[in-house]
Each structure stands twice: as structure tokens, then as C-alpha cells.
Length: 288
Image (cartoon, rainbow, N blue to C red; front, side):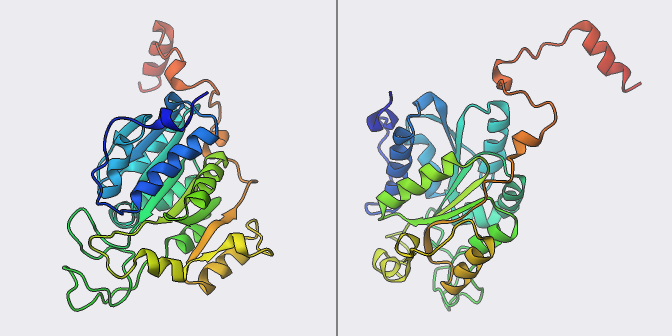
């Protein structure tokens, strides 16, 4: 049985000291070990940005994709081998700017993968420009007079798009973040997990202290019902989308794979895909 150390490798992360992404990495590793996964049963697909490096820091299958395209790769991987536990990851720029179209369609498609966004509300890798998550008036190198655009609310968008699992956490709360990732992996459908992951180098506004003052922990709200979609959306709007914990889960809607007619339980990677001459000729005849 694999333990936490089995998901560690000898690649030293080159994130800035104090970066929230360290905790996201540790939480993924802890969650995988807690769920009794083996490294060969886990695949991490990442995009571009500081967060994109995470696929190389975990001892599992890893693929560092292109900007905003981790989700198409991750979905294809799951379809080819449905026995794999597939995690897609990226930053708020990767997932909510260039990759936003893929994010919305992955949500409505509901393939059984987990998408973890490391939300630092700035572009860190390119040295500090506004992202879709930067707040109104946010000053950066690209908006020296302050951003005139409102911040995107991805969790509200996810709810409106029909998401079946929506969660959020804060990188300094490793216990909760680990539990949220475990719940996302266990969910049979698309799981969206947004993680407040402070950039200590370029974002001097949304700091660890700032988040500690503003997050609203659902673990402390006894009457909250994560199966109530309307209540979840209302609570998101009431708190400015600062909720942390499992915000919404719909266990009734079937995943994409379950709805594909004739889709075999056996992974494509283990199926005999060689065509007989008779099958080949029959396929060719259909195009005549």
C-alpha cells in the first residue's frame, strides 16, 4: 500500500519560498495516499504558469501541457483509461483566461476528473500582470492606474454551467484542502476545486493575512446543505465567493463516460484495437 512518501520524487520545486502551490502539491500527495492509490494509478496534467510545474513534482504519471489546454488532455486521458485517477491543474490565468472555454465545456460534459486551480489572482510566471481574478482597481505592471475590469467569479459560473461538484479551499489550511481533494476525487463526475494560493512575490494585496480575514469556512456553518444548488449559489453571492469547503455536490447526474453508448469498462489501453480485414472492409464500404 502506497504512503505519502511514495508520491514524492527527487525533483525540487523552484517555486518562490512561501508560494501557496507547495501546500497544493502536498495536499494532492496526502489525498492520494489517504485514498490508497498507487503512483501508477494517478495522472497529473498541468498547463502553463507557475502552477503548471506541479505535474513534474509528484511521483505519478505527469504531463506538462500547453497554455489553457490541460483539460482537453486530461479528458482524453480519462476516456482512454477510465481506471486512472486523473487530476488536471493550472492557475487562474490558465483556467479562466485562455482556457475558460475548455473549463466551461468540461464542467457541462461532466467527465470523471478533478480540476484544481491555484488561484493567486495575478500572473506570476510573467512577473506580475492582472489576471481574470484580479479585483477592480488592482495595480500591476499591466494596470499601473488600477484595473478597470471586475474580477471573474468562476464558482458562480461553474454553478450556472451545471457543475456537479464545486469546492474551494485556502492553501494554508492543508487539512481542509486535503479533505476537499479527496472528496473531489471520490465524486463520480467533474470536480472543480478552486484554491486560494497566494503569490508572495507579485501580489502584495491578496496575502495570507488577507485571505485569513476574508474566507468563510463552511465547516463552521452547521446548517449548510451542499446538495442544495440554489442555497449554494446564494451563499456564494452573499460572501463574494469567499466560501471554503465543499460548496455543492450533485451525486445524481451520471458522468459522461456512463452515458456513452457501448463504452466498455475495460480501458482502451488494454483493448485489442486491431481491425480484422472484414471489419476494415465494412468500414470502408460505409464511405463509398
